[in-house]
Structure formats: C-alpha cells, structure tokens
Image 1 (cartoon, rainbow, N blue to C red):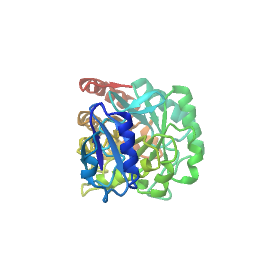
Image 2: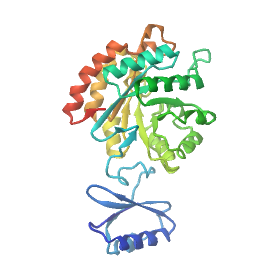
Image 3: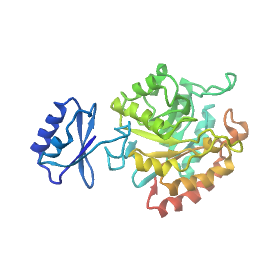
Image 4: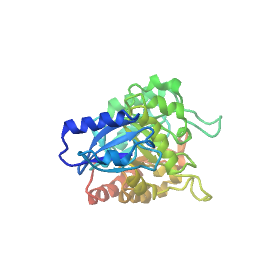
Amino acid sequence: MIVILKQNSNKEQVENLINLLEQQGVTATGINGTHKNILGLVGDTSSIDIENIMAQDVVETVQRVQEPYKKCNRKFHPDDTIIDVCGKKVGGKQFQVIAGPCSVENEDQIIETAEAVKAAGATMLRGGAFKPRTSPYAFQGLHAEGIELLLKAKAATGLPIVTEIMSLEHLDLFADVDIIQVGARNMQNFELLKHLGKCDKPILLKRGLANTIEEWLMSAEYIMAGGNNNVMLCERGIRTFETKTRNTLDISAVPLLKQLSHLPVVVDPSHATGLTSLVEPLSLASVVCGADALIIEVHNCPSKALSDGAQSLTPKQFSDVMAKLKPQVEFIGKTIG
C-alpha cells in the first residue's frame, strides 16, 4: 500500500500519520520524489481502513499495491534509483559499459584486457574469479587468486571491478570488490540473497535461465528487504526452444522493468546469444530500449580462452562496438562514463 501525500505537507502532520500507521503494525517509509511525496507501507495492510487514512488532512490518496514486491516497485519509489560505483553512476543520465573476460586466467591476461577495454572506452572491468560451469571438469576459476589479480588490474587501470560470488563462504574475499555479481544459477539462492542484503556493496543480480520477471524482482526484494537498496537487474537471456543462440535475449524485459521497477537495468548480450556477431546489434538495441549499462565479454585472445571464447570479443572488436555505441548513447541524451 502507498499513501500519496499532499504537496507542501506539514512535517509534524506527516510524523503523526506515520505514528498512526505504525500503530497498526506496518512499517511506513517516506519517499520524496520529484513530483510527489509518498509513504510506502510494508507489512500486513489488509486490516488498514483506507477511508480512515484518507480522512487525514495530509493525505491526497491511498493506493493498494497488488504486486508482491514492494521495495523494488516503482509505485513505492517513483524516481529512478542511481547507484554510485567509485564515482561512476549506474542509472540516470550516465551509461556504463562493463567489459572484460569471462574468467580471470593469469595476471598478463587480465591486465592486458583491462588496459585494452579502458582504452576503448569501458568504464568498469568484469572478470570471473569463481566460475559456475556445467561440467565439473571445466575450468572453475582461480578463486581468491582471481580476485587478487582483478585488484591488480584495477590498480593498473582505475576501473572498478565486477565479479561473481557463488557461496557465502567466500563473502570475506569480496571486501574490496566494487560490484558483487549474483549469477543466473544463484538468482533464487535465497540465503545468499539475504546475506547480500546486509552488506553495503552494489549487487548485480542476473536473471535466472528460466525465471519470470516477477520471480526476478522478488529476488531483488530479498536483497532490499535486508537493507541493501543498491541492486542492479541484469537481463542475460533466458532458455527457450531456440537453438541457434545460446539463450534468447528478452529485450522487452528492459522497458518493462523500467515500468515496474526503479532499479537500474543492465544487459548482457554476450551470454544472451553466445555469438560475437550479435553482440553489437543487441548492444545498440539495448541502449534504445532504455538499458542503463552493458556487460560485455572481451578477451585478449578468445581462441585460447579457458571459458566462453566463442562469445568473447577481441579488443579490436570491442573498440568497434564502442565507436558505434557512443553516438547511440548520446542520441538518447546520455553519456558513457
């Protein structure tokens, strides 16, 4: 339920209303928007008498919210959330491009790739230290050493780093990581999400392989319910009947999420298709659809990559994508960086 307040509401009246509401067993959070101020009510609102609330002088109207997700719901937070990552804004008028290899393999590889993507215009560095793989025999990542190498690449380039967590046991290793990624396979690892809700790190929450948008938003709700509101939603393709691409990019999810939620939206065209030839057109499409950022796989030598070489761009290919991306981003009134 949300309570929309009258403009120029008296502070004392608002505080009295909050006390009245909380006496009825709900939590009332004030949210100041550009065009209106509201109180978002979380808890069992079924017994609240709407007519009684409407009778308060400070109240303009009351609306029940049918969706089960509250904190990530745009009705509770009309303005877009903008997340600060080392001075770079995700959301609003800035557009971020996160780039780097699927896996961190060695120091030369990650630093060379980091320098290349920065030179091309990337604003953040991605790289997997822990890698969930379908086969138990495939390369699983360098783990703690991989994070150390990412931090060396950050020191060399200044790029904030994004890497995936797979287990609560590893959380202490992520103390210096700038954005913690929750992969598609862990989107509904609710115990992990609860603990990430207690940390102060931005979280990049990838959509599950076969999850609905509502299920995805409910996973974001788990994190936000714990107190961490710095959540980004990453569309990375879903599993369908199509076999020509690795997954199917649900491009419609981007504008739909913008209607339903205030959280920033990131698109991963690399995992969505598995084909380097489709990264550029889907990156451009994502910008037009309203994405706030892209996360693109780039490897200094894809043919020798230990994971996902087939979907990884070379530094030259990435530079070409960035050259076409920049005017597209500027056309919609945003800037990269």
